[in-house]
Length: 386
Image (cartoon, rainbow, N blue to C red; front, side):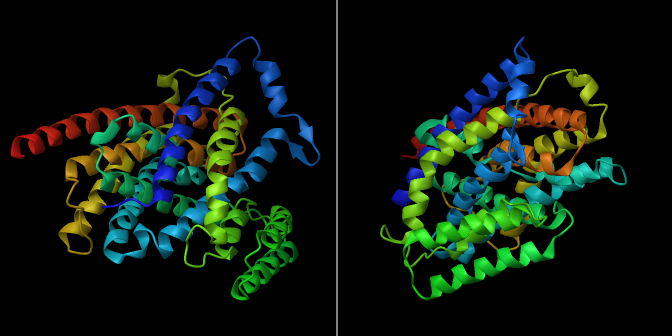
């Protein structure tokens, strides 16, 4: 299978971005648990206009992240792996299993409680971290496996976006929502009129974001809507969508997501791991990410292939799918993002973030070790037959 240049660039940026995210998380956790923790928390809670710095990071900068996710989804749907039904169905069903099983495990422990709203937390996969871990395994990783993980994570992000839009929307202010959707409609008309200049789309996107922010629907949804309004054309290097997507890769990977990590992992550790597991929401997050993700991804993939609905690429096997399933348990960015929407209690948010970090670390280590073993076995098998 030949990879497109944009896909290679995407993997490279996500790989490097994942390593930077790890560094930022370590730095943030270290400062938050040092003698500077009060000053550090105060900085992120500093008010600027209507909200804190942390608020503008999560509602403003992350909209740009979602714009990039939307552009990647658009490309995958039109000309990428998701444009071919047989290729698209495997990661689609894998992502579906990777969302439903973790949510079910979480709800089995939290249904009817005040923390049941956290069911969306273990449904997410952090594409930057997952690809970052996969990249550490070197050139032995088959391209099909990289494409599978990338498509799975992108579809997973789409699922998370839908979950946010449907389940984490506050009381609606319909006038502002209708204005935001009206602006989007105008941008779609500009698209149909073949207006290729980015300026009107970006200006319209800013106004759409402002009205969406004050409508009750989470403002980051604007990023995805705007992505599908921006002209795609034939997807070549001169297309408006390609130009914007290529431009956003570096600032998102190396500026926006690291800032998000710094702002949202300022976690002061008060609880031990054992005491955390006494909390049903924390245990639900751990079970969802560490067990639910790999089980859901593997079972749904295996079942749909055996039923003939989709096919397994020739250069990967079920062991590798299982290993990638654990990498799917690296929730981080999206899981923390949903935590901020799901809970209001500061202690629950802090503990949930800590459990996301611990669970993501465990899932990542298991996935790395499993894939290292399985790829080694695969390499010996191919060497013996060649």
